[in-house]
Image (cartoon, rainbow, N blue to C red; front, side):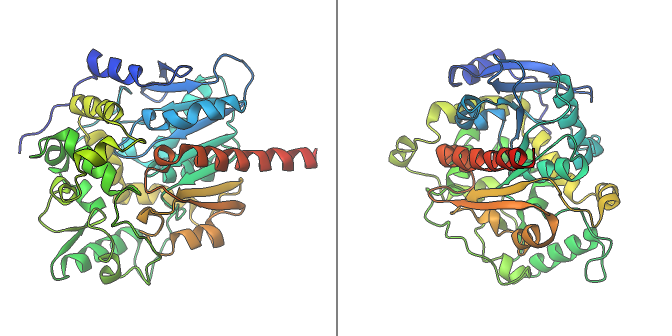
Length: 397
């Protein structure tokens, strides 16, 4: 399959995104001092001196994914900033080639991206960094490594297991991952972890040039991982064995030989279901379609490739045994398998990774895209989390 040549976001795709933004959210470009011209959306920018809340999206998403929570957070008194992360959307400067510099997408460099943006905007610290999906471990790494700059952290839809340990059952992290993939491939029928699929050279082209077209692929992907799909009935898994992992939906543990587009096509919603989807109407989905049609998805997929990188693991071993010491919380949809896809990860956050985990909120009526499916409940959870910090600070003062 031919390599997709990413190009800048077209004026038409940019205009479509701007047309779907609520009034009061603005779009601009900012040099983050770490090699990027970052596209950000922001709200609450009119009044100087406000504390900043930084929102980091996941895959396949954009800063646009935070559009429903930004204004309520701004109305509560915050300067709310959501960047297109490295490799995504209108942010320029990341190496989005499959065979490009993958070290740009190591978590420590994504922390540099966030820290550089914060400082460029005139802040030494932010009230909170909030991350969703693959943005969750990025936010967790921000808080782990620079607690002075990221005063609290909210991790959403993907529990953060903390930095790697030097040995796991006699193996290092990359060896343990390789063993899991081998065990999945040995099942009957053979299975493939979605992160391994996303790390393959053809994954980008498979999604962009799929038979149903990019727009319908994204519709089916968003639908199948939402509370709208009846197949999402998540529960904690007994173990992290290949057999137990294979009980999850196929968008997580895929059938080997099938593409992601083929996997989610079976869950394509009907025309009536699409029309009834108030959390992601067609005009808003078209924003993702238009932008990813221009940029491709490889920039976002690079993070998944870095997860299995020996060099990335080695960098993070510097923080082995270190806890997140700032106030933290976890938020996810009650119908999201993401909470349980890494067995024991949420319990690990509660027991060891986070020294001050204030709350765990599993929000009814939401699947994986919780900030889009149930934005009011997410805002309530975030503002409650921030208010408890303010109250504690006041008591100490």
